Image 1 (tube, rainbow, N blue to C red):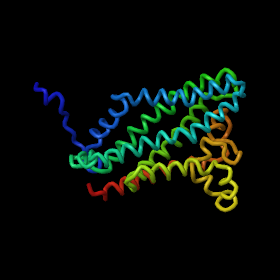
Image 2: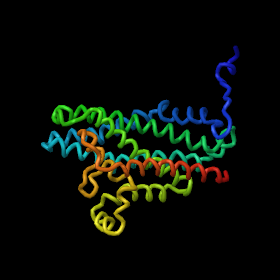
Image 3: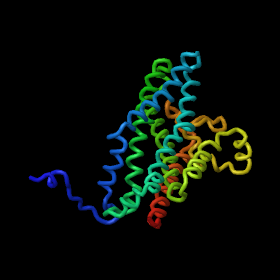
Image 4: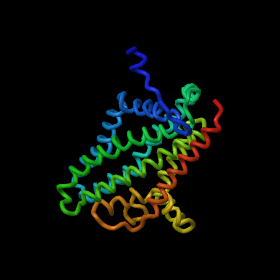
Length: 267
């Protein structure tokens, strides 16, 4: 058997899936065959679990420290998702890699979907599962029976949904704009504008529906109603599921718009 017969595996994908497996393998390789995975894991642990350790060592109550963890996951961690997602599109567009890749037997929907899947799995492992497990061990002893293991897993699911929102938003914006400034600026504005106190009051007065259609309530104590992830973590019923459904729909819309836009891009 020749070397080519060993290394080259024929693909029989058709339609919009053409090239998806190869593109997905390439994108997953950028996470797990480089140092990115351990760098991201290290930053996540130092940022999230390190702050919890320092807060609890400084005498902060465990419930307040846990709320800080959720708030950080809701406001700070999305910046990592935004940065990685925008670079995966803009970096390839600016370097010419995107034009070269799309000249191969690769459909443009597969180009976007491969990035969504690969970066979604990478963010899930590095920024949700690993720091989430350590976080659970940090607070399981002090909180005792008040902490629900199944509910905590659900809270981490909301954490991932929140990250997925900003990742897909950045991917979509990166297909609409050619510079990093607008992508980062718009996505960061969406992440931070809602929880800012000087915006909350006029928003509740003139557009109260915004808090139900954007992901702020998933992880942040928005308007002092408590984060939905906090309800799940302690085994309490959710006050509403509308933000969860709306966030999932936004993610699908962002991916759809990104696919629509990239199919009209001329390289």
